[in-house]
Length: 355
Ligand code: BGC
Image (cartoon, rainbow, N blue to C red):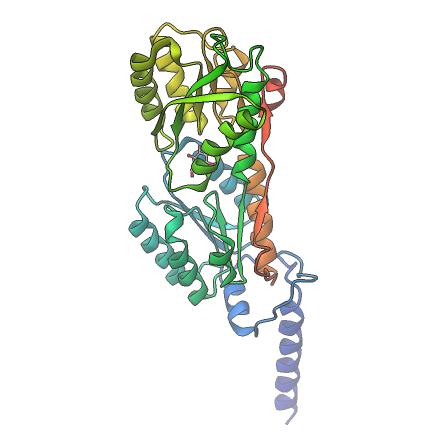
């Protein structure tokens, strides 16, 4: 009888203890999947206010659209570092620019029972399918870098997007040109003649940067002439090839080279130098990202400027949002995008961004 009582008492104590732990997600969770079990056992609490304290630890699957992308390399390294420093068990996989492959990777992570996913989609057009998959599995998910529409995200309240508003970066690129001594009109013929080296046009960053860089000029009342627009898919070699071809075709008529990102701008610079042209003297060149290589070229006067696409800031925000989701936060429709600001980089302030 005594024994039974003692057993009953210890069961009672254990239950009380477990209940107390369940309410305290500030306790580091190192087991990897207890968060998942906790979530599975807890009824949905659709509350936006007062999310619980973030739960450190646990397993996180990170899907990157393509490891060879220069900017996403900086970004994924930052993510890995931040997550590991907080005690998470992280696996980062390369989608190799193949949506079918990425879908499989997402499914594998789900089967393995990860606590959260951070996904950089290969194709924004695949967002519906990705969201349906993570929703069916009930996995808290942060989408990064390639923004779906608000409507696409609205179907799942444990989903948030972290990125930047690409319109801002396009506008800043245009302003970098407006701020040059001749406002981009090097030959003084009353108009700015440019070539546009575009990223992957499926990606909203490429669409907006292309549109808003030129819009900044036209909004300022400047006449523009587009000599050529070619997709370079964010890659350095494509930037080099495209600009080499355009310079061969249009020669000194090219006053401005807009590149949707820095990696293509570095390629463009190789072509510009090979053609015997000199940036900031007879041609202007701007990019976006503030890759280390581009900062060096801005400093040396070989790029007119770039725009900081804050990989560290975005990685930090992505982890913050992930922890809020893990703590039970849900997102209301129309409030699922978290933006980090871009910053204009010129020879005047480039030192602030160099490590
Ligand atoms: C960056 C590019 C990168 C792309 C990948 C953009 O925000 O500026 O450098 O290639 O994201 O989606």
